Amino acid sequence: MSGNWIKVCEKDDIDEEDVIRFDHSGKTFAVYRSPADEFFATDGLCTHEHIHLADGLVMDEIIECPKHNGRFNYKTGEAKGAPVCVNLKTYPVKVEDGSVFISV
Amino acid sequence: MSHFVIVGAGECGARAAFALREKGFDGEITLVGSEAIAPYERPPLSKASVLETLDPKFIASLEKYAESGIRLLSDVTAQDVDPVAKTVTCSDGSRLAYDKMLLATGAIARPLPGAAMNSAHIRSLRTHADAMALRKAMLPGKHIAIIGGGFIGLELAAMARMLCADVTVIEGLERVLKRGVPEDIAHVITQRHRAEGVDVRCGIAISALTEEGGKAIVRLSTGETIEADLVLVGIGAIPSTELAMRAGLTIENGIAVNEYLMTSAPDIYAAGDCCSFPLAIYGGRRVRLESWRNAQEQGTLAAANMMGVDEAISAVPWFWSDQYDMTLQIAGLSEGAVTHLRRDLGESAFMLFHLDEAGRLLAASGIGPGNAVARDIRLAEMLIAARAHPDPAALVASNIKLKSLLAA
Image (cartoon, rainbow over all chains, first blue to last red; front, side, top):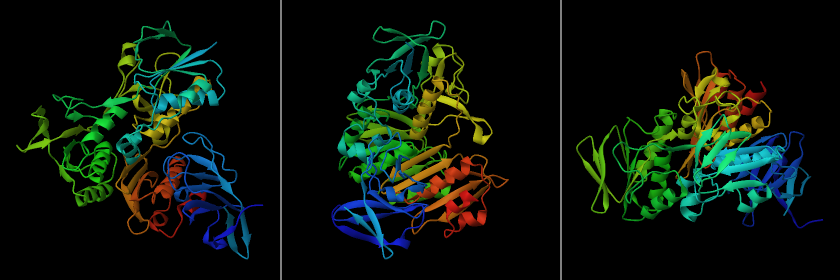
């Protein structure tokens, strides 16, 4: 379906309802673990200003930018209103043998 | 068709205009702004994003206003409001009839008595043009004197140092950031500025500020004289209430509004820096906030209430400041706090929790590199909104997640 799978981390390196930053090939991503123990990935930078989303707060399916509180649904990338109006790009994620991979 | 007029095209007014459309308002919207360019974000004016790129960060493109059916009148000042006839007279000679009006007139820089405001060598910061004038002096070998150790003064001091200008900050009170920032955090900021080579001088009043021979001359209460290529006067802001005052609206440290952002006149609302409002989470205490997020949230709330939603203000005040690689964030208002607890977040970041006598969390403030404190300040904000009385032992224990307190 997509390009190469890149290993991000072990499953338990991300807490439930939390996010980590993952840098790869000069790009930065945010990788999430939902309260229902599913994993997701998006671009790492907010679409409003270049701020790392991984410093933000995850609540349910929302990631909130640490700087200006722009909110996105990290499962779909949807921007949830001012100040953010551009959606986040999302990436496929899989978990195998306790490790998290994303396809970039 | 219904016509809503928004006076003031800053963050608050522009957000209100778009929020009306997002909420389904299908009447006419006119946004009246006195600046020549489209609405832009003001926080970057004292930060790297504008001072390095030199471009304003527009809230939306001109196409977006057109697509959204928002008539943007730039370079037009609303001069008089007749709240009985429900009309606004503008500087271009037009008279607009409104069904509802929002005053989002913002604030202006507080002038230093007896001194010029915007001359060749003396500047305040409010507009993009001000920022560009300041930027021109931020060069190696130039000396910038900053009067006032508040957020704007200190952010510009940091930018000027990063661009290799010499900087002196003169604060009248005994320390910088006296209004709203705890001493421990102000101390960290002062130390950092000094380490970067800024001459931070507190407890010194200004006797005179003049221009002579291509320089600005600052005379201090100590008898000393400071020569500078440019002086920034950053001693706070005063709400723009003239229009409201002439229209006979109640003024109380800003245009007085109720919890729905309604002024004393029917069908006139006010929001953002220009208004004072009762804050329910602090017992209905009347406050006025000068902050980007407040402007945005109240613009959105005013739009909802102009459409008849009747939603009361419930937001927790929130501020931030960027200086060098550090970010300071504050949630809530700490007036009335008697207990101040410290939580360390890694090596060089920490936050303070401010609790009242009953142990209720009133405010939290934090500082650290990048956005190190952002997540915990956001959680503290939720605790403040919930009027929580968190366990003090848990607040100071870095290994106990603040999120767990929210669920408790």
